[in-house]
Length: 272
Ligand SMILES: N[C@H](CCC[C@H](N)C(=O)O)C(=O)O
Image (cartoon, rainbow, N blue to C red; front, side):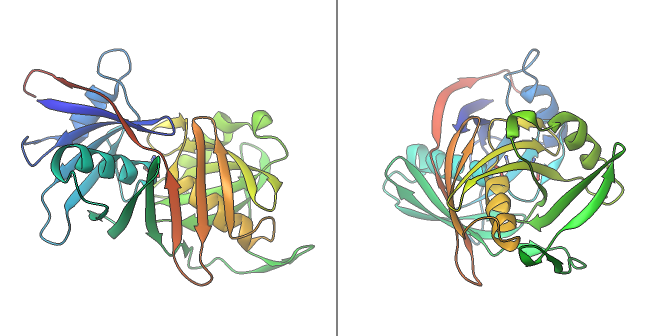
């Protein structure tokens, strides 16, 4: 089986061109190939398949084999793979995901993705805080009270604002929230430090992966939550351990994510 190793701000994927390869058991394959000691090593398995409605269909499987509805870094990597191997001249593409059709544009140094509008949890009600009406929930986790703003970008996110990302109890709280009864399908948790109105620092504990170098949907959720709670503007530069992403949330509309994506190497492994 041929594959391409892709990365976007250090969030890395094993990309398989399923226009040419046939994958029968993606969940177990993701667990085996994403292992960084006994496999190729990656945060996820990215399958690119034919689509009747788009340039291709993207399926993302986390390192633990679980399927995810959306992946912002993965979409940019899919665009880079398509431009390199299947659609070399295309400047604009549409990729089908489990969360619907997503449009992306090739840009200097990477891709810009229309992530569409965020969705708030059904019961998320504004509460009055010193910043006015904000959307936050208090959770009891591991004997601590954490305040979260829950946002869906086609996959679930819990955003926690902290003074310093370096001091966040990321594994303790991220792992506990991932398996918290409030999130029956699990959750990605972002620990967000507000530098100023237009700059955020973020670390992410990803569902099905653990801490990653970056999370595209997580960067979007961080800016949306920051804007909803009056902590930052609707457009911001998001600095993650693996690099910087740009997020813009149009008034009452979609979120746009912009950042790099590259093919690091390609290879072949025995038929799976
Ligand atoms: N772990 C995520 C999927 C990968 C998302 C992330 N890598 C991104 O770039 O958005 C989930 O289970 O929802």
